[in-house]
Length: 117
Image (spheres, rainbow, N blue to C red):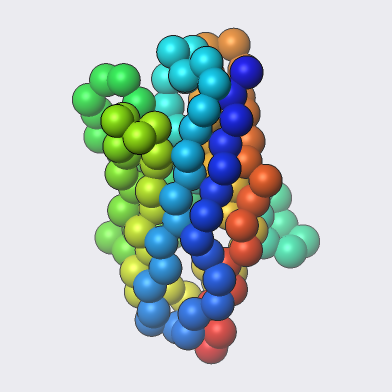
């Protein structure tokens, strides 16, 4: 089992910045990647960004956030961060941390990000 605890998020104006952090505990050797998804009201949950946890590689971003969001990891603290810049109202959503495992995926509880116009 893997447990994920998210922090960050909140309310920001258009063009502002926010940071999210996700701390993972548990059987981390089973995890291949971590990242963030988001779900806006009335919409399906969608990929934001992912990054591999134990091997080097290029992070994967949704086209809608490329150039504005940056995902990073800290293996010493088992955390994955998402720095969000140049935020837009359409970025408003509940953001969920995900740990992608060899046998199962694990989700955090979600944190609200609201971008006002």
